Length: 292
Ligand code: RIB
Ligand code: CA
Picture 1 (cartoon, rainbow, N blue to C red):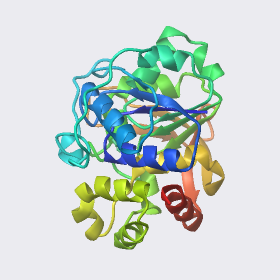
Picture 2: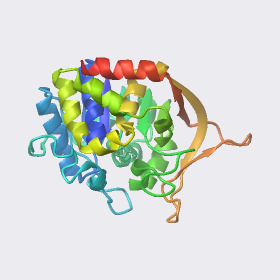
Picture 3: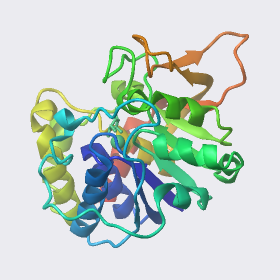
C-alpha cells in the first residue's frame, strides 16, 4: 500500500498518473504547501483524480513550513500549479487531516513535496517511523547543485527543519532521490514523441500536464523528479543505492536547506539509501507501460 505526501505540481501529478496507471494500491494523498499554497495542492490533487476517473481520499495538510515563510515554485509550475492543464475544482474538505492519516499509515510513504507533514507526524509520535517500513523522499542535491538556491533543492529548501527532522527520525528504510538523478533520467523530445504516439487517456493527461514544460523539453529535456521517486518506490530494483549519512543545513546562511552527505570513515551510521544510478532503459519501459 502506498500513501503520497505531495505538493502538486506538474511532476507530482505525473507521478500520480504512473501509480494509478500501474494499478498500484494507493491509500490516498496528503497535501502540503510547497510548489503551490496547500489549498491549491489539495484542489490540484482532486482535479487530477477527477480527470483520471478515480475517487481516492485527499488529506489536508500543512499550510506553511514549520519555521520559515512559504516560498512557492509557481514560477516553475504555473500560478495554478499544473501549467493550466486541468479545469479547476474546489479543494476537498473533511475527513482525516494529513498528520492523522500519516500516523495511522504503515506501508510505503512516498514524500514528494516539502516534509512539513511528515516531520509534524514524527514530532507527534516518535515511535511512528518504526511502523513505516519504507519512506521514499524526493529531495536534496548531493553532487548536483541546488535548484531553489545554489546549494539547496526545492523540497528541502522550502522546509529545511522538516527535512532534518525526518532524516534523523529513524525510519527503517529511507530511499532518497535527489536532483542528482537528472544526470540519468531526462525526459526529452524523443520521450515526448513516444508519449504523443500512445493515445491512451493517461498518456494524454500526462502530455497535457507536461505541455507547460514544452519549451524545456524541446531545449534538451526535463527531469520529472517526482516520477523518479514513484518509480523508486514501486521498482527499487531498477536503481542502485548508496548507504550514506545525510543531514540538512538548518543555519540561515547561504547553504540553508542544503543536503550534506558525510563520506568520511568516521561518519555516523547511514540514515538513508541515496540514488546512485538506474537501469534507464527499464525505467522508461516501466514509465511508458504505466501510462499505456
Ligand atoms: O526539486 C524538485 C521538487 O520540488 C519536486 O518535488 C517538485 O514537485 C518540487 O516539489
Ligand atoms: Ca513535488
